[in-house]
Length: 111
Image (tube, rainbow, N blue to C red; front, side):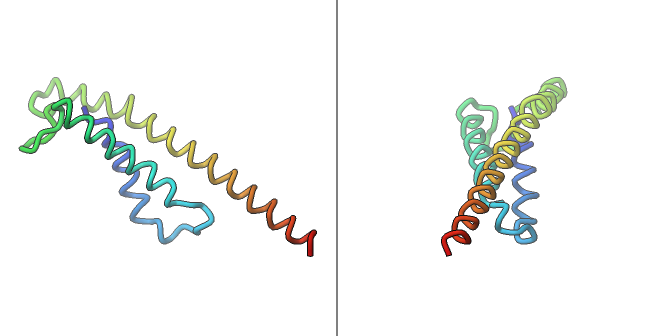
């Protein structure tokens, strides 16, 4: 229903602070991964009819019972999905930093 809201929130926050984070942490990777997932799930939810082009936009918000299920989905699917994307990004950054460090060491020993 609305599992994309958790990564969309994270993507919005990260996008707004990306200029304050050093480039070596490849924040753009994280932003692309988060926004890519958001777009993918947004389109999927439109196809399923869970998102419509008229208010309240999320069909789950029409009924209070469905709204509770929507929040449950955000917490149980959206948040773990977002945490997983962050974990993958952290692993990618660690590998990148390690490779950069090894390349710099080789340059020093060659010269």
